[in-house]
Image (cartoon, rainbow, N blue to C red):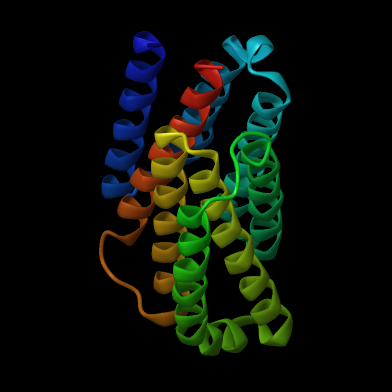
Length: 210
């Protein structure tokens, strides 16, 4: 277990949540990408023994870092961030697909999550259309489909680290989407970032374990 790495990531994550509460933009610009760089570094330490799936996960982590930067710029690049995270999820899907096999559990999960995704899209669609028209509606719908597939592939893979990480990632994105397109609520960013860092750390930990 990479205890030192996990300790550094935990401290950086907690520091980031603290600067969010203090509304320190300088601290946010340093600690958000800084925490992701720690997560990426932990994954790359044992990358050689992780094979192609490990490389794909690390690529997903890098695309996530790009997405983070797009969403934290003074002039936010939401579509750019969405595109970067979309590429990240495609990398994760490809990585998870290399291990595991189709089972009734993964099929049942796919059906359940498809229903949840359609239900969520119904609520997100008006806000997305209001903010960016049909183009953004299509982008959000496609993104929901991709992240749903990512969770299904994590279940198919069978790793508990990946399943918990994928669910945490989906929950983080759900909070972001609800706060942006439906109704803002207090502590949304803190909650979604805590889940986000947890998800990415678990993905990196899977690479560490090969």
